[in-house]
Amino acid sequence: MDSTPIAVNGRNYRRPAQPLVVVCVDGCEPAYLDEAIAAGVMPFMATIRAAGTYRVAECVMPSFTNPNNLSIVTGAPPSVHGICGNYFYDPDAGVEVMMNDPKYLRTDTILAALAATGARVAVVTAKDKLRRLLGHGLKGICFSSEKADEATEHEHGIRDVLAMVGRPVPSVYSADLSEFVFAAGVALMERAHPEVTYLSTTDYVQHKHAPGTPEANAFYRMMDGYLRRLADGGATIALTADHGMNAKTDAAGAPQIVYLQDLLDAWLGAGTARVILPITDPYVVHHGALGSFATIYLPRVAAAAELRARIADVPGVEVALDRAAACARFELPPDRMGDLVVIARHDVVLGTSASRHDLSGLDAPLRSHGGLSEQRVPFVLSRPTRLPETARLRNFDLFDAALNY
Image (cartoon, rainbow, N blue to C red; front, side, top):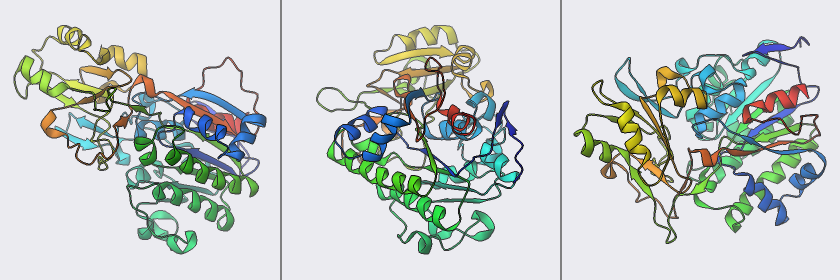
């Protein structure tokens, strides 16, 4: 393999001197690791905290899955790579669409660049919605737990995944979906010997269970065992999250929701404005498509400044900004954002209309993400680094720290 550093999005990256496993733990508020270590269920992570790199970083806004996974693998914010949500309004086509097609990605990934130089690269993601984005331009292995039984050599770089992993296809609404990711990572390390592996889980557990609960600790105990096996196989472990997680309820456990479309319909007339919730994806049972970030498209005649101020005064709203201010502050692509951006308070979510959100699938008090309050994420490497203690860390600095420090 060529030893010349690769350049991706303004940064240079060295080749790994030993196998590197980068893990994005979906929804992992740092307290999940801290509580699990305190409970004695993550002994391997405890050794990393004592002797490796154990810091807290910020994720990108909005604090959702797609923008942050793509930031991690490109080493850049959404203003560069273009993925600013799981879902968005495409004004050119005049339709609301999932942002899981690689055509929306505006730059190369570190994974594809490493593979282009001859490195063996493998990607395993829990949900298939991310697979095509993470695998864009990648000459290597890339498949999802959700559709592991459909993997082919031609499209995914591998076949017979279930036989390799020794587990059946898990339910998309289960902790097993994430465990399959880790089990596949271990199996790949033992059989395909990738030099760089990227593992991305699902936040099913975090949406239902708070840090330190028995269910959460059981999940992190499982994860700790697989991370130890990967490290024992000679890999450096680098771990972060796409976002944190918070309860979005009142003291009685009832969801706290601001229905923006209903408000705007009352103020401006039905259908005059359009509210987009970037958390929206095909898997809404555990959060009802309710997150703490929204963007609003207004008619030309609307007084955006007046509406921004009016929305900012709504109880439960933390920030309301116009497009220019939001994109400058949060490094977002202006052409893919609405006229206004609204962010809810830490214990509140944003909806469109009450009639459009089905909360019947919630079997636990609502926990979700998307806001400023979910930006804190772990930043962990299984070895010490010389990162400045005063440096502002972002989750998309992880490849830089793992390969260059």
